[in-house]
Image 1 (cartoon, helix red, strand yellow):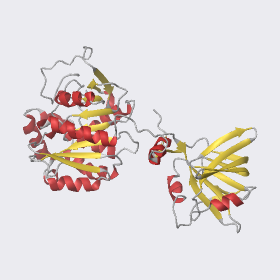
Image 2 (spheres, rainbow, N blue to C red; image 1 turned 30 degrees about the vertical axis):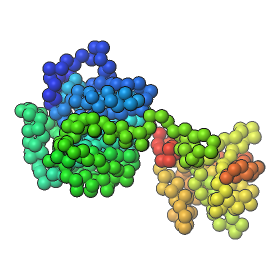
Image 3 (cartoon, one colour; image 1 turned 180 degrees about the vertical axis):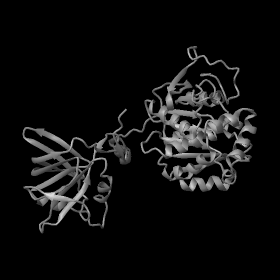
Image 4 (cartoon, rainbow, N blue to C red; image 1 turned 90 degrees about the horizontal axis):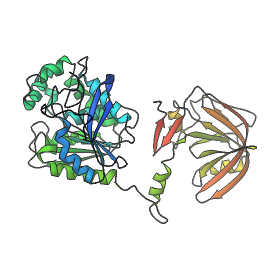
Length: 425
């Protein structure tokens, strides 16, 4: 029945969605309703807690309260068919469904959270985040990464999990629903290599599932990984030593997603100001011209802006350290090529050193004889009207004499030091 618990161990706990408890519901994969307890102020940085298979959100109660008291907005979620979340009518318990649930929940949040997962919950989270191109989280905490699955078949893994769960129907329900442990195992390594966010791996020293060597090998795959081990904790390290685990998570959060947002004041670290500026999403352009012997020159620039429609003026900013700056200062014309979402390779090419940036790409010229990159989202041919040196940049003001654009394409975006794409919700 929807709303009943197939795999969890707290069947006696009422699923009162309209009670005075702070409960939030999400629509998961295939329309399944997923239930979560929420703690703290929703304006604070968000943390999503995921239980393992056979566990429910109630196990996270102490950790959730501690995180909320430390200034976090905490969402403690029941997996499909667990606790108060719905059991799918089609009995779909495939890995795709669990991953789809998580992506759906994160897309319904007001901000990108740090995901904290216990065992299978975390591994499913890793598979989902590491196989999603869009940034849907800001950090990841995993426990007891598996080392023994490579030598087990699906039946052996399920038997191990079901023994730990003391659930007679767990294995049958999960297999009939299509969950494939080997598929999950196969997704973990490529997902780890694709992670681009801070990750904490926590291992219980007494765990019979995870070894120290396997944890280190996994950490080596993740660019921003840290490892912590807790003595006296085993398979369920997040709950065996709950206070120590919560302290590790809080330290990780404060190091990577601090409660108080970073602040720049005059004279402080310029990197903070750069990161603040990076909160403004921009398009990406390639600015081009020809040098005195008509060799094409170009570089990637995201400081492009419309200045005026009457007359039609635009501006670009080039750093005073740019090697081709003198060429742009000397020439009377330049072009601005706004890149589309399929031209990320061109952006990388024109920001690389020691390569022929125009080799292998299609370009042409118009009346002003400056390079126009074919297939761009938009191109503007400009006559230089003014040049202003301010700080460590030179501002070029250009009058647009010709422009064309392709409205059926989408822009390539840049935000927070990373490429982005439009998301249509």
